[in-house]
Image 1: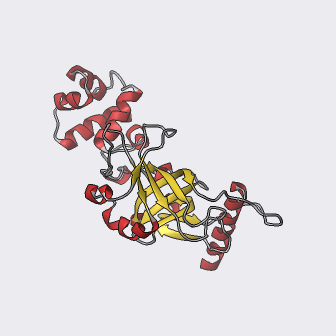
Image 2 (image 1 turned 30 degrees about the vertical axis):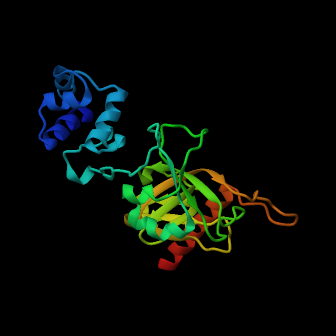
Image 3 (image 1 turned 90 degrees about the vertical axis):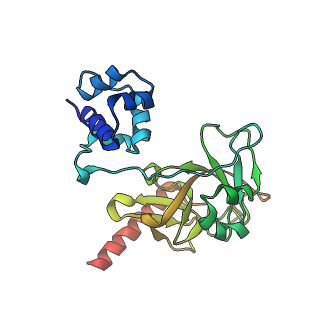
Length: 256
């Protein structure tokens, strides 16, 4: 019997559900659950996705770990994302202006707070995701100027962060910030934040202080980013990665 078969049985019992209860949740017949648990059949990918969401367990853990052993379990964070919708039941893009960013860390999960924010739609974004807009301040992410609006796609877990890509990170420690992010969750339990403007030093944010993650997908600005004559072009992702690795090596040397 494979891990997935054992895990389905374990997770079902942990919920206090019968096989019929689980079958009802998945929209299948009860004998199908029995065949999964007894190892006579393996769930299809669509069913695996439903199981992952239903039991709040990552797909990697569901397939590759013995979830009956508490030392191996890595549950996905349980969280209901507050949203607003328009008259046609389409999700809005809520805008968090600079002046509202300080209060966002307290009101981000409150539907009434979101109702007070400006809201709009963009026709060219896929409809299968949730988006939010943030007005950035400061010059740490030049050539994007202060006042630029970043459109972010909601990221459910830090595991989905792609190193060197830009994200809006909402945290207890820093509030709302827009940076290039490097994920060191497994090694150190932190996210490494890097500015495009090299005047600003990289820094770390503890993972436990992170409230929301939004991957930058678009921006709105009244000023076009421009590299002036004689200015150094923006750093490539390879250069940024090299800088981060160098900083890590220096920190390691200092600790020895």
